Image (cartoon, rainbow, N blue to C red; front, side):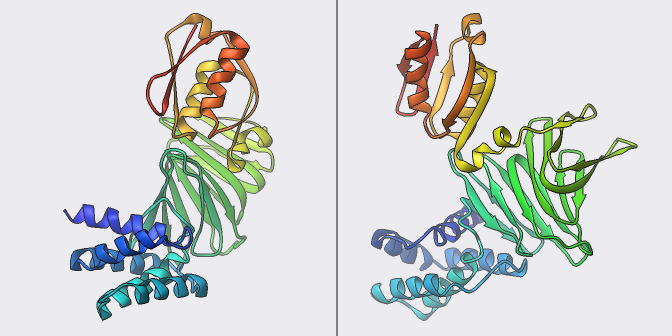
Length: 313
């Protein structure tokens, strides 16, 4: 039951920073907060994030919260205290889809179709693609972030005396700062540098690789290769787009399914496997893409349910 309260607290904590709440949301939040267990979970989430140094005062958000509390009838002092404390901490949360925190660190997570940019305690930032999870752990010696799954773009402030360290799988990438992207899908990881330099070393590897601007390292554990990175294609998701150059349809469908809340379901077919796709597409445009397959390739498209489109030859 404690985990339920924590998850609900994280949901309200994140919702507070997305903008002014509707009247219905304000009423629902205050009713939820009136339960002591919920209030305690909310305060713990806010306190933990503040411990990491990310909480910042936001006058507009504080004013909105105070107004919401005034509008509600019978608001207790306890509810007012927790509401305002949460607003202060949420100002530093960056609109995370879901955030769970403890004194040791914070976990930031996105769901299907959700993309967010969250500030980190030192003024750096991380942008998460949909279905991504990062764990933030800072101390006096280093800034450490672990990508558990998905894709994250970091804009790390330069601080040579306090290295920025990204862990992905069995690899550790470290540098003084810069802009870089890290991806993890199953056992395959990719690190690319948009600006700056990172030293990358795998746990079981004797040698390290130094990546500089425009380079990337990718592949399964133990078989990574360094190559030039197509930055425009590989970072297009930050603008809500997917870019493909002669990519097989199954790969394209998998990308849409990762980034969009809608889904493409491909029938097993060698004909579908042979279709190649090039172009730039909105990743929330799954339905339009399915219809384009019908028009451009003569494929059969059937809407299975509200969010799923079945594609067949």
